Image 1 (cartoon, helix red, strand yellow):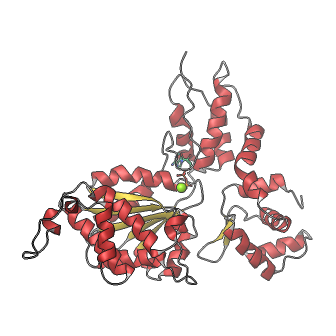
Image 2 (spheres, rainbow, N blue to C red; image 1 turned 30 degrees about the horizontal axis):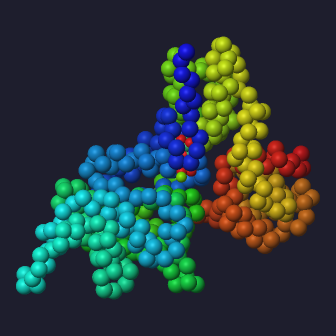
Image 3 (spheres, rainbow, N blue to C red; image 1 turned 180 degrees about the vertical axis):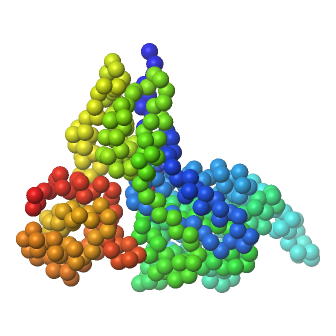
Length: 401
Ligand SMILES: Nc1ncnc2c1ncn2[C@@H]1O[C@H](COP(=O)(O)OP(=O)(O)O)[C@@H](O)[C@H]1O
Ligand SMILES: [Mg+2]
């Protein structure tokens, strides 16, 4: 009896059975390693579930084979509070690469000071890096630069060409002017300054679409410092590969062309939804004698499951007024693309839903923005921040139809 282990992997950061598309995005990042002096860094943004984390993971081996060192992690919210926290984060990440390298030649005290270096001082452990940070005089910027310079000095001995600092969920980095905490600005200043000095350090940030305006707001030079790569849904051909490659095996389930088209339409090419839907389809079809060849995708069941598993939680957090507004937006022709306050106000009037003046709408959009349901792009237009949300709202809260 063959083993029908479901190959599909819906879930944040779960490596897909087959990574479809993304060649051009990968190339754009890898090309940045060819700069003589690094002045352009990578910024990968996109909606939740579009594949930022798995793209970042997929770059790791390619970066290593170019002989660059890869360090980095998720920037969860705790990393973002203060300058010291971000410094701790960087020291931790760097020490994974540096703690095995003996740096006695670099850290030996000048002649005449006497005393041998202790054993532990000869490798750049976390404690040693943090010690450099704490002991360096000046601002956090000077301290952090000293740490990274020391780390690079040690790592360059291994023949590495440079260090890639990859940070996922970077939208969590926030300056808090009121509390006089500027971790985001610190990170940007540090890399800009080190890169100016010719250090081969490259920053790769990924995050939600709010990240780019956030960077520019913190430091206007960010606009020139980053190559911005917006990750969008997969094309129909790429979607087809994401669906079919994992089940190529003759023993696996079989999807008719029509079933594949249904999955493509239902997912609209969004990778998370492709994995989610295919996982359901796989389970439904393995039980059949024909392995699904003559079956059709149970669309209504899958939609219902998506609604409860994925959308309902987000919807539950909205107020009645917000639901009205979201429903108006979901009636716009441009609901799956960009929309403006003006369009919403006009639609509300047309549907005879009262109380949505433009200032009120603006305020509500701002609140929905901080709830992660919509976001404002660089041109000042709004978009749903969750793919396929418009369809859900129309199923959930039908108005004017
Ligand atoms: N190019 C791709 N091809 C197939 N599946 C993908 C692709 N990119 C992402 N996925 C799948 O989509 C889901 C979301 O990916 P993830 O990287 O966590 O998105 P994000 O970080 O943008 O929220 C995961 O289940 C992942 O396996
Ligand atoms: Mg992610």
